[in-house]
Length: 146
Image (cartoon, rainbow, N blue to C red; front, side, top):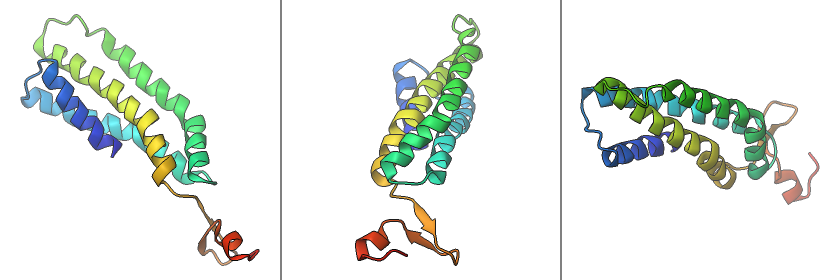
């Protein structure tokens, strides 16, 4: 969801920035998908590994992997900032597409995805002694302790 939204937003804002869709833009867009996956995958994995209710899992995911993901976004942005005044078409488009990708991919990975996961991610599952996953709150709901 976050990856698709990032690609759609990059396409839309690239149009308003005056970028014409061509072979060069398509290649940069494919690279943008990879960066978007990177930003969202780390948050999603941390959410999957966390235990507790969905909102707490989203909070834990942001606390554990949010700072490294932000550092990746910020360092990528700093790396392409030197291309802001480039005169060559390829480097101009590179700067425009990667600026959109880092800003929008970072926004979707660090803001939108955790919010969506906190509402739709569900509570974590625990394993019983036999290795069978069970819903964490099911025993309390049915009045059982095991």
